[in-house]
Amino acid sequence: MKARVLIRPKEGILDPQGKAVERALPALGFDGVSHVRVGRLVELEAEDGADLEALCEKLLANPLIEDYEILSTGSESG
Image (tube, one colour):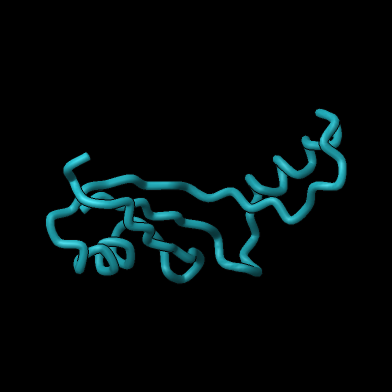
C-alpha cells in the first residue's frame, strides 16, 4: 500500500516557520494571506496499512503538538 502522511502543528501550537512565511508574503506581493501553517509530507509504501497509525504515533508525529492525516494513494502496482 502506498500512503502519504500529512503532519501539521495542532491548532493553538506556535508555528514559527508558518509565521515567517506569513510575514514574508506581503513583500513578495501576496497580500491577504493569513493563518499560514507549515507541515511536512511523508510518502511511504507499507505491506500492512494497519500499522500506519502506530507508525505515526510512535515515530513520524509528536502527538502532543502535531496532528497527522493518513492519505492512501493506492496499491503498489502502478
